[in-house]
Length: 409
Image (tube, rainbow, N blue to C red; front, side, top):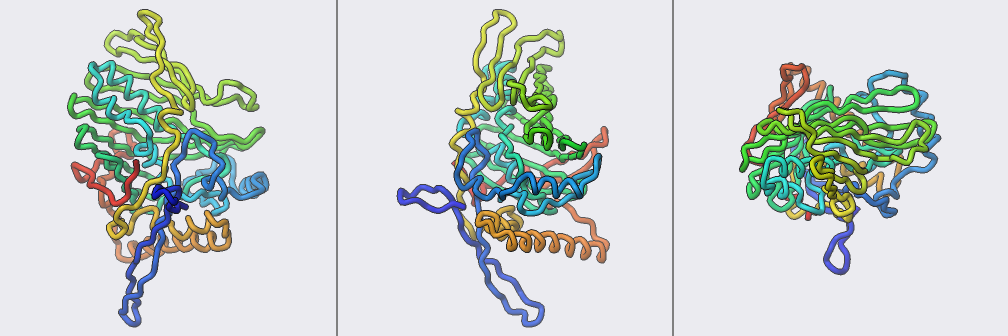
């Protein structure tokens, strides 16, 4: 959790929000405090501070206890982890952080590229920057239906909403009026257990719109691969395609992990190429490691240059701060999970179990209430639908995302 330092800066932050609640018996208002707990985003460093101090001991024992209750090939989207396996974040926050937690302005570079090819190259770098190092042995909370996460970074405003619970579909909308950029991201993970590993296939698509240039870039996400045996580990794997609908330029990337035995030196490897789809000519080759540097080789003259430096881009990241707690939405992730966040940070596992159970029971109560009234839940900020391919997709209801009372540098 964040506390303010003597220099006026922040290392952690914990601020409270007063919630008014009416009791049925007396109709009186009772005020209680909910603390907004904001933690550092995932960074490229393996930091040994409070961000990992909440990890519970005896990881192998916890894993073996889970394996007893999970069958091979089972659908894990309905499986609830005990809080000892959680870190104090919702999955919505993790998605949002990959957009607003960045130490360099790659989006501005995308917008300022002089040619369609320059802009695609910067979009490739931006797409790689959204890949953050996961932590083995802990996972974020499954967002509740209607949960939101809303953060501003400069002129970029980012809003996420959990638009479906089964399947677990998350929607993101980000707008930057200054740069005239819009991001729409709708995706849903489908994790499968296969004995020695879990692979979460991330369905859905992202759209990055550079409105000044009339260009839309569509891309997918890599899959999360969790290896349990023989050597535990977690990584991003799979193919990512980035296509500019207007120029016809395409980037094909492949994320690779270490070998099954865990001895390969090519960890977090990324390889790929940039192609002109009209001529099928390979213009550039992409090589490197997404957690260090990625280079681009020009196929005409063999010149090589660095297009992405992870240490420069996603290191030294700071947690957001709350500038106006009274205007934080009651659906905000950090409020919904506030008690559980605090319990995990203090390693009070009994309190954590009760806090998590309370959130889950509240969701079940709301579901029963809707079913009794024969009501269908409708997202507040997005329209959810299935496209022609039968995949879930979404569109934002508002043209622009408003400024948030939660901000980050």
